[in-house]
Image (cartoon, rainbow, N blue to C red; front, side):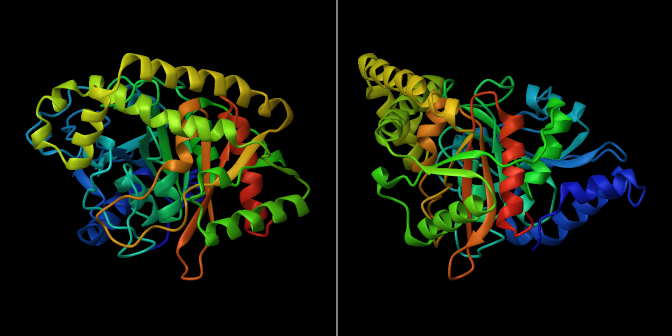
Length: 405
């Protein structure tokens, strides 16, 4: 199964080789052909011929006329949303047409949905934006929306072999999104490549930077002791290629701030989730064990513990901001390794926690594999609000990885 290139679709649309209506029909046909196996979709809308580029929407994001079920039995009988989430409104204005809702884990936490990984059958697609990642990886749609509170966009992109963008915290409103943690929840989007993400971002934000070599700080995440040998090798090879292509490449020498941020993140997430999802906490016996545990842990977390974690993040933000005075991006592993075998869990988000605590934009770039051919993604992290520049650097890095520089 091959992802659908947004760049190629846009070229075909501009040159009259296809129409938005034909693109929508292609998407629906592809979904009909493949989704009985992949289970990437929850609901599909009656598509509007000629409306725009086909788009998947994660099922915690309101889409007018479709229920927002959040992957939970508690929302099985939810009424259709009466209006679009603000981010859906923005994507519609950018020329995208939602085709329906993609699978999420339960309330965007760890309990897996039914989605399969098109790049690695029998292995997890990741979570919680699993349906959106799979929909793009399988060529069902060229774009799909996700969200990230810990590693729910970057990790599935790495596992499924596609690109993703996590936007800076607060870049777009989260109105109409069923969140977990207000200080951590961020919007995301999946596409086949970083070049496709840049096209989508230009449509959404009206901004595009040229592809150019960055000043790179390489974060190996050694202090976290989770990165597997194939991913370490991919990171080493990536750094070598980027340096040979003309980028400034230096190691991340003091990993202590990132380790502290990584430890602070789950404290904040649990505390805020227990309050954001108080109605669900009240019926914890009807939740999956992972979500019930998160909410109960958060309810037992004291205000002092929460404030200490928030102070750690604030301090880390100041210390890490200095990095971007000297470097354009941080390069690191997007996940500990390839997608783990089995569908009972969604993998470890630890390599995203620290960056998510800071609310920074992140691009996951595909292009590497392990010895078994399973995808390995790398992440580029940029300065807050710097999506446009980050995507320019990601496009350049992607070309280097592909040998096109």
